[in-house]
Structure formats: C-alpha cells, structure tokens
Amino acid sequence: MPAQLTPKTDTPLVELFSSIQGEGILVGKRQIFIRFPGCNLSCSYCDTDFSSPDSCRAEEAPGSGIFRSLANPVSLEVLSSILANWVHLLPGVHHSISLTGGEPLLHTDVLRQWLPVLREICPLFLETNGTLPGHLEPLLPYLEWVSMDVKLASMTGADTPWSLHRDFLSLMAHHNGQVKAVVGEETPTEEILQAARLVEECAPDLPLILQPRTEGGRISLTGRMLLDMQARASAIHSDVRIIPQTHRFISVL
Image (cartoon, rainbow, N blue to C red; front, side, top):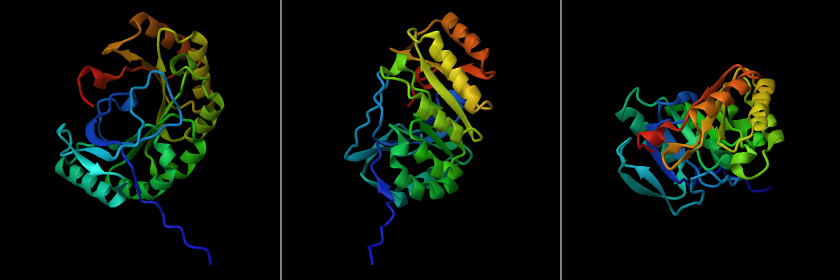
C-alpha cells in the first residue's frame, strides 16, 4: 500500500502585520496582512522582496510597528493563534485578512489547509497577479474578495498575459472583487482600452481600478492624464476608478 501523503500545514512567510489597505476598493479598511514569498513574474515597477527568508517578520501587537522574528516555516497553529489574539485585542477593527505577496497562489497546497481555519477568524481577501487560474479555483469557496492585477506590458517590461488574465477573471467574475492595473505616463491608450474590454467581457460587474504608479512618494502622472485614461476606459466599461497607493502618503506599511 502506498504511503499516505500528509497535508502540508506550514510554509515560509515574509511578514505579518496589521495596517490599512492602501489600494483599490477597500482603501482605508483595516486588514491583517500575511505576505508570502516568491512570484512567478518579475515586474519592473515592483518594490517587494520575493525571497524566502529564514524568519518571518511579525508585529508584536497589531499596528504597533514593533516586530519580532518567527522561525520559518510558520505553522498553521502558530499563525492562527496570533491572528485570533489580534482580533480579540481589537474587536471590530479588522475588516479582513489580506493574503498578499509575492504571489500567494504559489502556495496553494498550504492554502487549501489554511483557508478554512483562517476564514473562521476573519474574512479573507486575496491579492494576486491573475496568472494562475488553476490555483485559484479550489480556493474560491473560502475567499470573500479577490483582487486581480492586470500586468500591462508598458509597466512590467514583459508581454501582458491576456489569455491567463481572461481565464482567471472568468473564474472570479461572480465573486466580490476588483481588477487593478498600474499605469504610468508611458502606458498607451490601447492597453487601457484592452484592459477595459477584458473586464467588460469577462466580469462586467467588477470595477476596474487604474492605479497610478508611485515614484519617490509621488504619483507619476498628472491629473489630466488620469482623467483622460478614465474617460476612454469608461466608454467601454462603466465602473472605472482612479485610486492611488494611499498608504504611501501616510507612511504606513
């Protein structure tokens, strides 16, 4: 008889902290952030360290800004104990748990075990690059929100994976969520229009967020440019919003 495989319940994490959501439709909501290492893409604008560290940087108390080290890999038992304590310390404060990265869906095997438990502590919000549809599908029943990025070639330096984005967005079309696209001065109109068409065709009820790239603590586009982008995209998809990275402007994680 073949040996039974033991479900994996621990994995390396980069950091664990409590802060406000600074991007998209949940901007201003307080969340617990679980940052996973690793990414299957390499976007030129990204400022996140994808490496898998020896230890996870974890806040001592939610929002304290004081960190301690947790040995990696982190177990579900340790993580759920910390999160349950944070929710108990600040009742009613945390809107949800953000699963972010890197690319969290690279850890689907662990997330299959974690999400049913974490969901009992706080609702779950996935932030993803939208290129791993097969990894998303088994996790959808446990997720309250999905935030998918459209990786525009003008921003990433690589071809936009339109086909993967289409498959991914079709899966999350009837879920609570949003589609985000980072834009800059060099983003051509056709990319904006193609992103708008993608959302309108695959998930017309979801908003498209145009997120101006932040450089040196400032937005890299003028207001007039952003208004023009919004106007052009709105001719295709009715819910197009301009939302910058607000957490950058109030100096929080």
